[in-house]
Image (cartoon, rainbow, N blue to C red):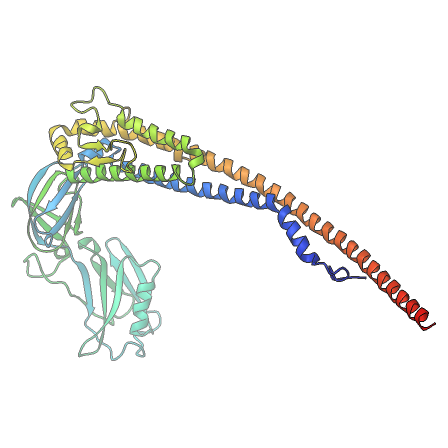
Length: 457
């Protein structure tokens, strides 16, 4: 039995079979290319969805009338205080004097210890109760070292907001307690079930001039316009000037100015313009590249977006179009420029429009019924939302990929069968040729013998 293809015939059977299989595998190669093309299109639609989603996100800062009523709070001295304003604030200027900022209450032990890790303090059953306001928690410290007591306080599951630490001075090791929050509401108190081994004392100083430290010394004190005094436990104050959050930094005087934040509107409109241009670039690139076969759909997306920009809004004050407030569209004669259709923003014109009629600008962008942004959000959502246009495209491509995969599997099995059949046929031919070769060799040998005998006679 001949086991090696071509051994009997001398033919390169393996090479012949490989070439014939390669010819027969062309449909399989075409299927693989088609599948790769489909995956490339799915990736391209993902790029398109991401770009349109980014454009949609850029609308969030100009999609509400309140965005155009934004206010900014500015401090003349940020070493004294900083501030921010919400839409609930009102324009105004305030002279603020920070007499003192709020402090964290701090306690130090009068008693000092030789070390933190070996000396046991108190006896079993001794308990330290630490209180803050109406809350408290207890620590069974008896028989533990200073380091262990520190850890028991810090790790207590019901700790009310007190941090313990160890200080080593010239005398020895002391336990310190520190409130994590500021103000009189977080004053620390201590009590014991047995003896007091620490003798805590206040590390904060008198700040209100009553010649002794009291809880009131922990609070911040702020004077407004030289007349009104506000005392608060926190350095973050939200209830002195309505709609304004004031953060105290240090003692001193600062002027707080609350005014319209046209800069924020300008920045939001610029982000809108930039995101629109980026989306336009993506549409153009995909239309001439990976999604050229679906260029009509991409043209339709661009035209719908552009159509919203180009539609004037009637009955909207003095402005009915974004092209009246500093936004313009690039047009290069001939239509071949990559810049065609892109938006530009003249910030000076926008700021003038905001100054002249901010309500009209706000309505132009953000009116819930007629505004540019709600209408853009609606049409962009139809492209990017779950089961929207782009999801529909990718779902269709995934179904085609599944179909190609099934066809490729059938073609692969057919090719394997074809190769096996060729090998079987060539092996059979090889065996026949080998047999004929043996027979021929035998006959040649017999003729040679016969001729030799005849010659000898």
